[in-house]
Image (cartoon, rainbow, N blue to C red; front, side):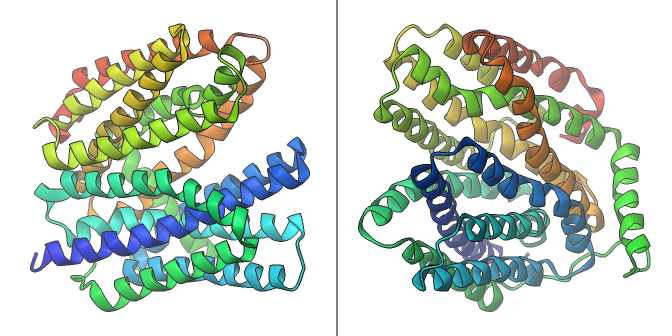
Length: 402
């Protein structure tokens, strides 16, 4: 691929701007609702607005990523989200500060992500050589982690000194820069298309979705990978969502403690993204995934056993470090083995898992946390995640795929 380094650098730079602006607004919406309403019901509506539309649209997002120009699709999704932010910013300027407006904006943002993320996952192998995918995906993970680390700091600072609409205008600006970089700067080769005629009817969309699911079913390694990733995603939810509550119960409810675990985890993922980008992982990607499962599971068990806060924070940082060592080889294994014409639909299934399984698991683990100590939930789910290393190493089909 000619000039792939330039294309990859421009693409990642543009996406970094888009992600950063989106995260700033995401934190601003959530914090504004919490601080102004202090309502658990409104927070529930906010979570539903942020996840449910993504889950519903992502199958179609995958189909569109396989049918249409992914570059234009990414920009269209980014532009739609920016337009929603612009409308909200203008409404806020004129005093229309209503929760419904913010929830609507969250829903539009979720729809945009559900379209954009499968397209991004399918677009990267279109511009990056297969042997460089691990490093590029690792670098993308590091960039996302850096945004996750810095966006809440900027959001908190701006919210304390400026009106809320300023943060929405910031999102519009970063999206405009991202769209311009991708449209004018990134040159793309011809996109592979599925060997089936495009049907623009509703039945045609469901036929395409069915074809994508059949592709997953017929390719055993993809099916096995999705099942294992689903189990891992389900089991990591307590570590992702219940650790703030565990911290408050076990060590104290001071705000600085919650900030400490969030910042150290994000810093760990940043370092992990850099590590996998430089190192590239083991030659066999399933070995890297098995190691990360074993380590992440063991660290989760450690959270359930930690008796002091400094140790707890150190474990959170180490867990953050391991996350890219799992996510990156999973993504690369798909990008190097799935046919380009089906890439978007397979990516959308992974996105559906992430947007559905973690909230679904919290419907189970959330109420359990009020009757069972969170320590025990972490120990149990940590053990399951650690044991996932066995099928990753034992599966002949996964080992054959990479």
